[in-house]
Image 1 (cartoon, helix red, strand yellow):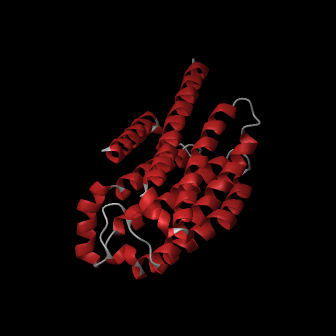
Image 2 (cartoon, one colour):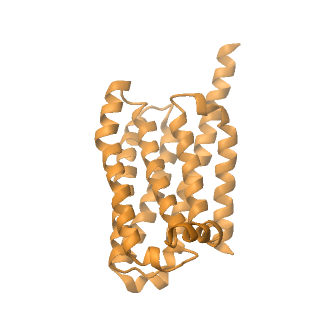
Length: 244
């Protein structure tokens, strides 16, 4: 019940934020932040037991692989973390410099990671044993490799984005939003760190049982969603006053 409530609250925050920011899909400098929220919401939904019991069984009937919805959700989270970096860099560099930096340090490693994750996932317990919650599934060699690659990539992406946010917070106008984004990124890093620790210490897996990973992951998603909604409402009010 606790997990269901946590997931529901996170998805409600995401839905509210997407509604507030619905006009930003056509705004070049805001679309990355909105995409991040949408993808984090999709990730939480696809990792949920509900998705495993529905979409997961359907995907298994098509591919023969269990828990494929979790893998798809994790890919979405990689793109979401990349969108965080894109959004931050866009406020620090001119368009050309930002595109070059993003392609070299974010797009290439993220693109390389996704097929490697699929290979490791398909060879291990993740694809062979059905689990309503993949965090509760005991890791073998390949599933351990999968978690290490995924979490390592996400920590790198969130860390890169946090470095840009540390620069943005020096501007008093951006400090509050940047601080909350940093806190949300920290929660994402903590979720990955907990998962890595349990991979290296398998005896902790039944004790942790995915609870801390879920908590930090949901705090990350809700934090970005609520802050992005607040940030856009402030900007929208400013635009309204400026147009009068």
